[in-house]
Image 1 (cartoon, rainbow, N blue to C red):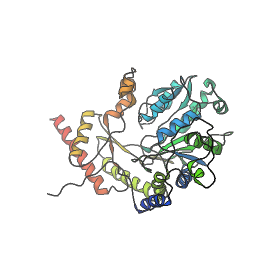
Image 2 (cartoon, rainbow, N blue to C red):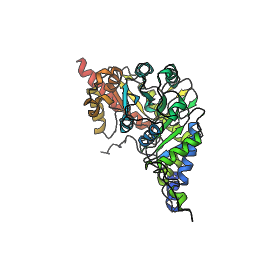
Image 3 (cartoon, one colour):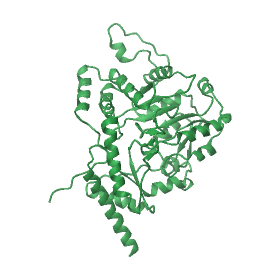
Length: 410
């Protein structure tokens, strides 16, 4: 009997163009931060609709650097959704600030009304999370921030200059997505993308900060500051120092070491150059195939993907069972694994994690996050996935759900 083909959850997209770009970096004799990183920053800036963006070694580092730049300090409050990966909360805690966790809406994204209720004089930042590549309602978030402007208490010159709560989007999933016709990256004051191994565009490990601060801020100045801080506060990067006779440098700020190397940037550079013409359409094809397969099943709730001029990056297909049933969800995932299909769950909500439970958080206080979590199954999406693979995934899930429902009825 032929062994069934294994379907991994999220393998990286590596084609000849990626191999060529990486090989070029390796053969150049320069593999850390240099020309490939600068080229990638240019490509991401174009895709995000901004003039400047900074590449770093992870989205987590990028968020922490951005919060640090804005002067977030111990005792400050940062509003985040309950339904996100823990990094969104950890970057706040690492700065000594307080993550204020609020519930989500039915589309997995942060509930704007909960933001309104949570804003206080201690609030310095709101971090909306574009779950699965579906953009948050940035217009509504901006409206709430303006309504609450009088509560804002600036603690430094940067905060005084902005005069309100900073909106920093955790767009780890949504590179290439659009909200009302505008690209992710141009929707919040600062937007952080992830280039981690499982993302739509990957550098193996990496992140990017898209800079979109309003006047009188100047993007080129923010970029220069953040770049300096990402390289230990050193006035000359290693590439510049390596040029003959250019060895002298100074340290002008106690910065971090979170720069992206060229050999990693090369992977993402080759991918992003074909993202809109190939990678994104292929992800959409897989998403559309799932939609056609599951849309007529009364036990399946589909994720949002397009509404007017708002469209997903198609990073995740977050299928939800009707009614919610965590035991059945786990059974589906286990039985799929037994036939070589890797399914996943995005995410375990923050209040369900030990580090928050120990502080008294309870998932029951976040009813929508609890509801979504108890029935969600995330399905593979990537260009290499065939329509036949999608059909097999659908049939496997349907068989387990149908059998379980029949048992329940009997």
